[in-house]
Structure formats: structure tokens, C-alpha cells
Image 1 (cartoon, rainbow, N blue to C red):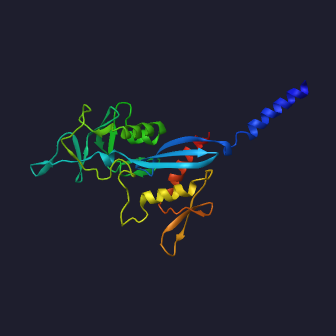
Image 2: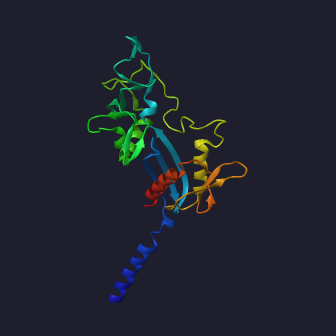
Image 3: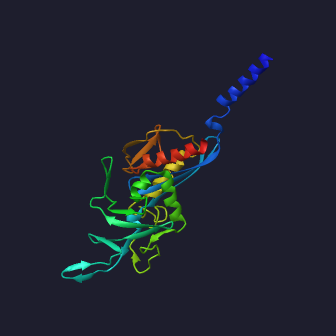
Length: 262
């Protein structure tokens, strides 16, 4: 009797130890994070038998991009005066009010942007706040859930320039030339960027397909003799990517991968 119990316990132990290895895992994972200072990154990874099948990746712009508007001021006593519902700084005009998923944010100028843990975020010169969210940027930086909320709002067309009561403003033309995300706006594309942002992401994703991801540090090599580009490598395998911030992209993909197998 005791021997039978021992065999059962041993069997369960073996299943626990060997039957749930990463090689057997199949699933989907999605991760969000404020990335490369000024974007909300989203990585979605599907995994089969512990190895990457697909990776979708994009970066969404923050309001300092999409809340730019075009508006004319009036000259009074030698100064240009602009409407009360805009913020005009050094030739650039931003909406004072924006609506994100039904929540109205009020903007105010902060010279030099914001500094967090001795790191300067110089593009964040407009501080948007709404109720308990005293600083939208800090809110996104500190919470993956907040980043997901933000991206979902953009994807659902629930982020826009508004009046103080949340109604969409159509009286001002948008000055946003980049779109809402890097894929949509074809960021860094054209003859001046032969590989571009999308090409870098594609090269990284291609190097990861069919592999079990792990926590690694990418290494950037010396300039290629033919192209002059400095390619990144993972475990001494060249990825084909050259973009400076590629480590952050990999880390976010790895975060999504971990969610898929956990």
C-alpha cells in the first residue's frame, strides 16, 4: 500500500518537474510599455511548442505628436494672441484639451519637459492631467494597464482633440503628420531610410521566429564593410537590425513571450 502511494507521488512529481517545460507551451502574450521615452510600445507574440510563431509590434505616439494643431493668432499691441483653448510655444500650437476614452485632459506648459529619476524627457513639454491622473505621461510610464488603456482608446478612435467639455474640435486643423503609430505613419520610410523603422522590426522578428526567447543582451557589431551599417547580434547570430533602440524592442517582445508561456 505504502509502495503504491510512493509511486503515485513520484509520478506527480515527475509530471510537475518534466511535463510542463517551456518546450510544451503554446499560447499568446501581449505586453505594453512606455518605450524609447516617447512612445507606447505594444508587442503581441504567439508561441507554439515553446517557440515563436508570430510577433506583431508597433509604437503609438503620445499627445505631444497628435495634439498638435494649426491655428492663427491675432496681433495685439505687438504680440500674437491665441485662443484660450490652445497652448502656443515657440511656433508650435497644442490643444489645451484632449479626450481619451471619455476622459478630458487639460494641458499646461512645463518648460524643459519632465525629469524622472535623473532622466530627462524633453519632448513632454505639455503636462496633461484629468482628475486622479495628475500627469498622463507619468501615469503611462508607471503602469502597463494604463498603456493598454491608452492604446485601446487610440485603436477605437476614442482619442482626439476636444473642447473643455470633451466634444471633438473640428475648428482647428491637425498638424500631426506622423499618424497615430509608427506602422500607420510609415515612420522613417523612404529613400533616406533604406531599412527604416519597419525594416528593422521585420529583421528582428525574422531572426526570432522559430526560437524560444530568453533574457539576453544584444550586441552591436562594427560597421559592415559593404553597407556601413552596424548590425545587432543575439548570441553571436546577426539579426539584420541596425536601429539604436533595438534592445528595448527585444525586451518588450520577450515580456510578451513570457506571458504566452506562463
